[in-house]
Every structure is written in structure tokens, then in C-alpha cells.
Image 1 (spheres, rainbow, N blue to C red):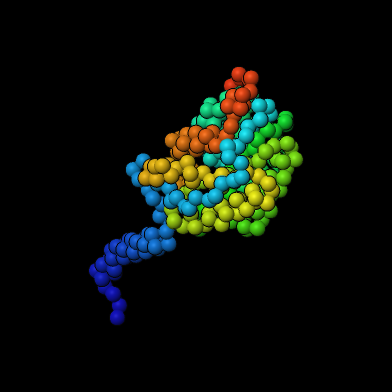
Image 2 (image 1 turned 135 degrees about the horizontal axis):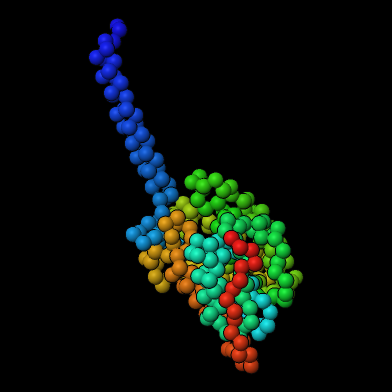
Length: 273
């Protein structure tokens, strides 16, 4: 049977509607799958709430002693560099620097998208190191999974690289404090990050480093939207909470009776993001 001109026109008019309906069905199915697998972040009107995992045991030193001299170094990725909140001046190392006293210099050694392997390829800042805080693993875990082009670093590689970084920092004279990767904003992302958080604590134990879990900084207000809309980067408020919390876990020179009266200078980024 051959379609008439009128029938052909009717079929042509139906095609866009059919395609639109199919597209809507596919999008609905994809959204349902994302929700079912836990990919959908805990979005709010102002950002994203964290999915707070179980708090990992800290240790061994509490509080963490800060020698009166030497560089206090923060090693990390965009959350440490502050690259999503306007720069280092708003990130948690700057909050930490303003909170403690008696230390001449705080420096940031971090950039957006960094894995542990990326930091191993960059030389450490010159000068005597006193303490190094290391917060890496979010990018190694490729936390966004199939929603991102970033590929996951195998867990054993992450463990080996983090151990090597800790050894280098110890060799440079620093007391090393490894921080677990901070919380993220969906169940699926949290699931991907969990093994790397555990590995960070294990590396701290194996390399005689201290360990802290940033989850503790956010437990008092679990319903606060501490993450940006990407469910990955800390908001300015979260950066402040993290910096203040970390400072409470240290003993500054003034608190140990040091005669030093100098105040720490704002952090400077050794590797701009």
C-alpha cells in the first residue's frame, strides 16, 4: 500500500512528537537509575548536604604539636588550594593560619584536580618543614564515577603513592598529619571514596604519621549544605569549619609557653591552581 500525500504529511508530523516522547522516556529512566544507584546528590536550595560516613579513629598524637619554627605545609587538591572559592585566602589553611599563633609561615602546596601521583611529580617547597598536613584521595578515587572523565587510580597505587609522599615529607623534616579525604554529597560518591579513606588511615599508621578524619568537623551540623552544587567542593562555610576544627587539634607555640609573639602570615600557593 502506498501512502497518500496527506498520510505522509501526518506521519512526518508524528515523528517529532515520537522522538520527543522517546527522549523524555530515556531521561526519566536515566534519572530513575541515578536515584536507584545513589548518584543523585543531596541537593538543597543553597548547595549540597554531605553524606557523612562513619568517623575514622584518629591518632596517635592529640593534640598535634606545632614546633615554634619551620614551615607548616598543606598538601592537597582544589579543596586545599581553594580554587573553587576564589583562592587560598578563603580555604581552610588560611583559617588555620589565622587561628593559631607563634608560627612564622603557612604555605599551600596544592592545585585543582591533583592526585597523589601529581604531587609526587612536583618538588616540595624549599625551607625547613615543621608539619605537613596532607589531604588527598578524592581525585584518586574518581569520586564522580561514570559522570566524570577522570579515571580511578587503583587503590594499591594510591596507598603506595601516599606512603612515598609521607616518606618524602618525613625526610624533609616534617611531622606528617594525613587527613582522610573529606565527605562528599551522594551515596554513590561516598561508596567510591570509602576504601581510599580507610587506606589513608592505614598509610598513616604504616609511616608513623598522625591521622585525622575531617568528618568530625561537620558532625555538629549534619544538615548544613557544606558542599557546593557539584557535591564535591567545600563551601566557604565548610572551609572555615574545617580550618577551625583542625586548629583545635594542635598545640601552638604560645600554648606551650614559647616566647615567640609573631603571627603566621597568610598562606601562599606554591603551585597556583
